[in-house]
Image (tube, rainbow, N blue to C red):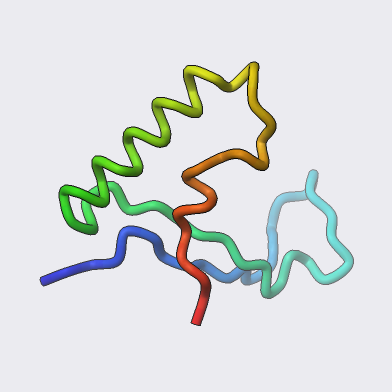
Length: 75
């Protein structure tokens, strides 16, 4: 069975006393990476992008993060 490599997660409100938000982070969307999901080609593509970003992390801007660009658009 195929599982998606990226899973969207919605914030349900924070319990951390050191973080503050006017809406308690309710509805915040983040993508989580599942290293055991996806095809071997997709996992290899993500690993290659991760290694490239790590090698060049002091030379490139965060907006050039290819892993971020590999995330799907939410439905």
